[in-house]
Length: 321
Image (cartoon, rainbow, N blue to C red):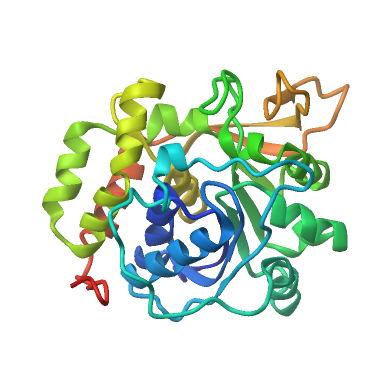
């Protein structure tokens, strides 16, 4: 099967970095470009992290386009308390060999599908600011992609940034609403934090297995999630750190991993007390569905993909020493 042509929009923190490894090094994805957005870290830091991650994956040739520096209307709120000040566990990664592209992320998100209509799959791993800005300029943007997969929200209303909201949806809910109002369930699939919390938790045994692989990619994936592991232990109470962006990428690369899905009409709350909470209306007579929501994936299948990818051919991180 040919590799899936991908455009990836990311706020590159530590789990985004692992998602980029899956996309670039699994053999299932053909990463044509990466766009970056403010979220987990400021956009300049996220851009650097994307370049480093692609280099670890052996794909230094992939262009990276810096994008929006702040949400549509709100003050930026990073997740550096989770991912470290550098977004990558503060492990002192060297600078990448390649520089970012001069073309802005929003321009790139518009131009790539125009050059390759219906060919590219878009995977979003951060707040939806870039996508919303592109939709303001082209209301048909989502239809120009083969499919759009978004890691956003929590369909069971159990959040990781508030009691009911997931970080990406919370960080820029206005942008998420713009995307939802342009979405159709045949074109747009959301994979929320509920899936990660249930099916993508790296237990201590999983973490040890990843570290024992000993390849540069495995060591990188393990080390950059150091501070996330602390957060999971102290705050979210999971049995290990979870990997929301990698499991979303796995769904895009291997949709057969989906065990449970539904179509529903989804909106997003903007009020102070409910900011970022998904409003899911399953009454077909009230509102037609606008999104396909993934509810469960194969944990075994996801982890097999992760371990197989990270066990791949050694690719030294240039400048590690």
